[in-house]
Length: 86
Image (cartoon, rainbow, N blue to C red; front, side, top):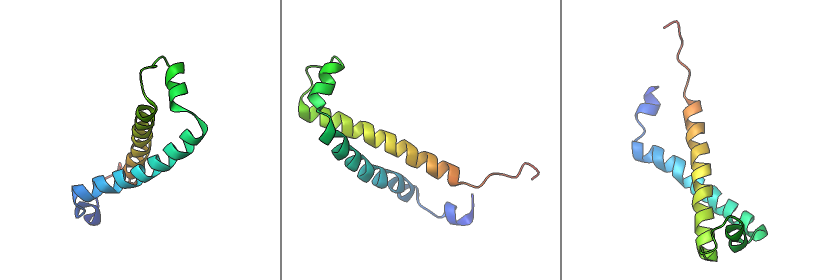
C-alpha cells in the first residue's frame, strides 16, 4: 500500500463504502418498487406472510448488499498491482 492509503483510518474506509452504497440502494429501492408491488413479488415467491413494508425493507437491504459489494470490489481493484519482479 502507498503511504497515503496507510494513513486513512479504517472507519473512514468503511464509511466510504457504506455511505454511497446506502444512497444508491435507496434510489434503487424507489425505482424498483414504483414498478413492482412487494406483496405480489412475495406471494409469487411463496412468502405470503410478509407485509408490504417488510417487502420494502427486504428489498432495500438486498439492494444495499448488492451496491456495497460493488463498492468493495471497486476499492479492491483500485489498489496497484504488485510487480512480480520485486
